[in-house]
Length: 160
Image (tube, rainbow, N blue to C red; front, side, top):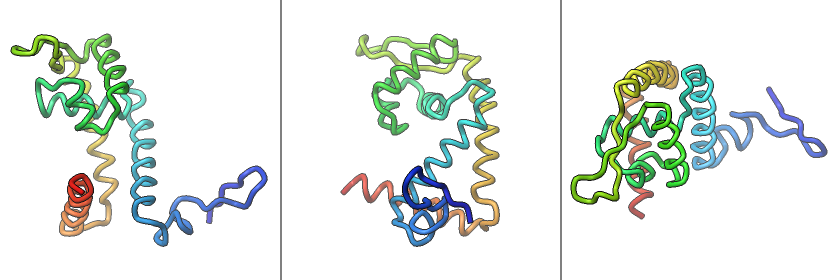
């Protein structure tokens, strides 16, 4: 049982303990899991020079060509400011290119460069390995149930 000591207060429960475990609020547990996932991805992608937000941005650009920064912010659950900085860094690194929208010239559409596609492929292999770890010990039916449940939460709460 791992406890984290706070300076002057009681010992704090570790992940999976007390209200941070099965007795916790589902919303808190989702946030805790998302935070652990993001922290783990930072370590896994670090030597590629890719951050989790960069991975999200590159993934959305590859999946939905021609997106604007505003589109990416909505799809990747990032702030417009974070997307702006992330895209600027990816452009500077030669991973993403911009081109004006055919109709709305002020809107810049984003595309991965060849270097960007290579980097995304390398990052995806690592993220796929993490995803495999996440469902280790879960059968196919359980994984489908988990995916359906998570998608339903997003759909239900986004429309409410």
